Amino acid sequence: MSQQIIFKDGTAIDVAKIDGQSTYHQGAQRDSLEIQITKGTISFDALDALTTDSAKTDRLTIITQDGDQQMQAVYDHYVIRSALALKSVEVPATADTPAVTEERFCVTLAQLTYAETQQAAQAATIDALGQQIVALTLGGAM
Image (cartoon, rainbow, N blue to C red; front, side, top):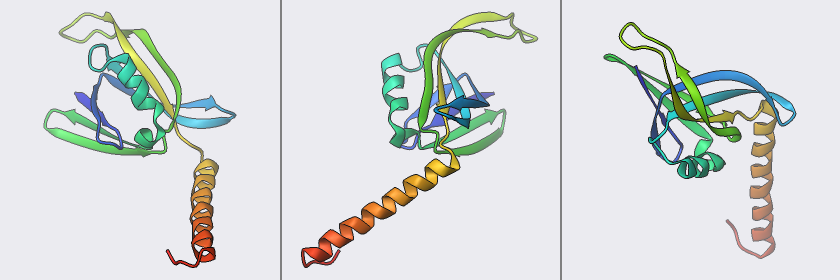
């Protein structure tokens, strides 16, 4: 099985593991995704820049390939980065390989709450109305 995450800007990264969880961050209980990336797949600085930009993490597409079967899931509004670290992770044993410990980049992205997404939509509407008022005041139409 392999997984890939595609950010809103089209950046695609192969990931080792993605775990969905619930976390308490910034005064609210939130859904979050812990994304584990094998060291060497992307640089730490590039991952830092990518996951700091909320415009890029606002929509995440996760593609899971399991043999011939491909599944795709879309996650919206995961714009709050609550963790970014290099961690030692134990990879469990399989029938063919022993358990090993490897270093992985781990980034946790938390989702905006419903109230926060509604506030953002209202702010955008208010801004658009303000721009229309300015245009009309200046004698032009938008």
